[in-house]
Amino acid sequence: MSSPALSYEKVRDHLSVLSLPSALAGLDSVLEEGQKQERTTVEIIDHLLTLERTDRFDRRIKLNLKLSGIAVAKTLESFDFDAQSSISKATLDELATLRFLHQGDNLLFLGPPGVGKSHLAIGLSLCALKQGHRVYFLTLHDLVTKAQNARQKNRLGALRNTLIRPDLLLLDEIGYLPLETPDASFLFDIVSYRYDKGRSIILTSNKSYANWGDIFPDPILATALLDRLLHHSTTINIRGDSYRLKHRRQAGLHTETKG
Ligand code: ADP
Ligand code: MG
Image 1: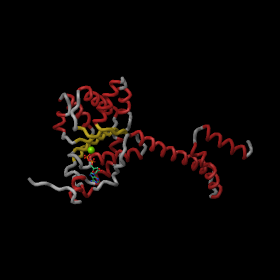
Image 2: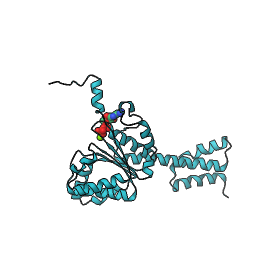
Image 3: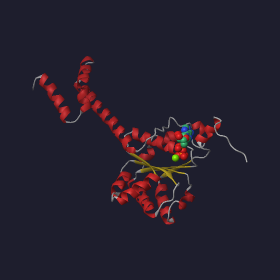
Image 4: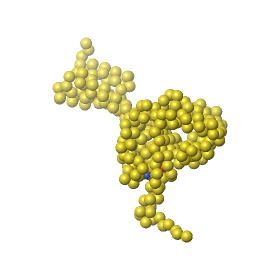
């Protein structure tokens, strides 16, 4: 056995070489506290490793959030359920357990503009990120732009990986623009692959399924896509007026003209 002083140096070196920076930074305080509280050796080791794991998890969440493309912090806590009677808080609380994600189910939020579809979809995605899941968010418009760029640069494979790998894909605003055949096929490929792997998608759309034929160039493709999306899924229909408009009206800022 080496001397205690040497052992201390060696432990520091181990933590550094093994890339355990948080354990290294916390070593002195963990040892001091261990001594003061008369902790056992195993408790001290546990404390040190917990420190490293907690910091590592926090770093992972921060990185995943950065990579997710989610730029606005729309949380479930900031959603006003009293203002939105077509959806219950209990339903969202159940979804926030992320059971759907573990089961590979899809979630589809349907409804007119401004009723909170994206807010709730992002809120649930933030729950998933907090639990350490990888999430990727984009609008259908982003997807089309990215796919067109990628095709020109011969990088469609890389984009495909970005969209199939995350634990959760959030596809926002389906239905505002009709798709051309190559983009529709690309989307179908992504949805099919994720379906086969049991990886969830959250999707928002202002169009009911009956009108999805308008978005896709080919009705057979639309049916096949819906088939995969809906097989293991929950659809949440949100009704009502636009939240922003309602609030502007309440604040007396919106004047309706009668003609
Ligand atoms: P949609 O995606 O259905 O078009 P959004 O989720 O973008 O609508 O909502 C529009 C705006 O109104 C967003 O800023 C959103 O945060 C806010 N909003 C909508 N519904 C609510 C609600 N019930 N409570 C709090 N904010 C809401
Ligand atoms: Mg939206």
